[in-house]
Image (cartoon, rainbow, N blue to C red):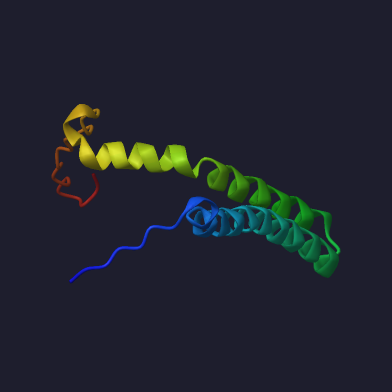
Length: 104
């Protein structure tokens, strides 16, 4: 015997709103954590070079994170429709035999 439960109105969306809130906190929390890592790196090393490196890492991480949906769609399309993509480039390398002196 299976039982199902149907919630009315606002209670039905309660779980979804909690998940949405946690997702928003996760997005903002990641950005805050990355900025904190940059600041801590600069303060610990007291180096302009370390600060620039940490800032470049921050930009790369946020860029990849912000484009995660489009990257996921690209990889999903590649896996689901491999025949529609560009064929791989094949390079044929002929082996040369070394000269009698051992030098090619």
